[in-house]
Image (cartoon, rainbow, N blue to C red; front, top):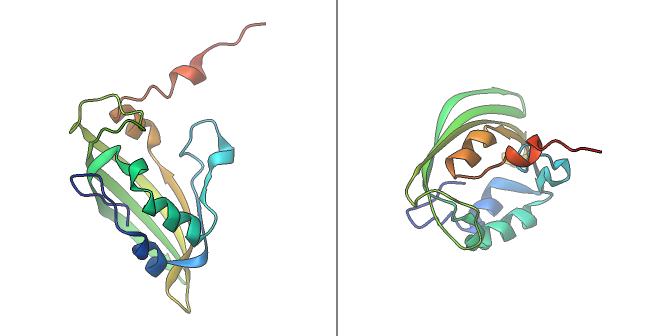
Length: 151
C-alpha cells in the first residue's frame, strides 16, 4: 500500500477502500518527534483515502519498496516486522535535504487488528526507526530537542 514508483506515486485511494474498514485507525506515536498529539495519522478510512489522493505530500521518497522480515498471527491480531528501501525525492513541500536519489532505508513493526468477518484491517499500531529515516533524508530532528533551556 505504501510503495512508490520512480516518480513517488503511491497506489490510488481505491487500495485503501479495499484494505481497511470504514472505522479504521492508524496510530504511530513516533511519526512526529516530540508531538504525541500527531500520533493518530488516520482516524478513519476516509481520512486515509483522502491523504492517498493528495499525492503531492508523498514525494519525499521514490522507488519505495517494503520487504517482510518476520510475521506472526493470533486470531484477529497480526504482527509484522518490515524494512523499507527507497530513494530520496524532492518537492517544494518537503524538508528533504539530500541529493535526489540518495538511499533511504529503515525498519518498523506494525501490529494489525483484522476484522474476521471482512478480513480487512480495522486498526494498526505502528512503530518505526524514524530517526534513521529522517537522518537519511537530511532532516535535523535531534537538534531542537537537544537545545538547553535556561532561566
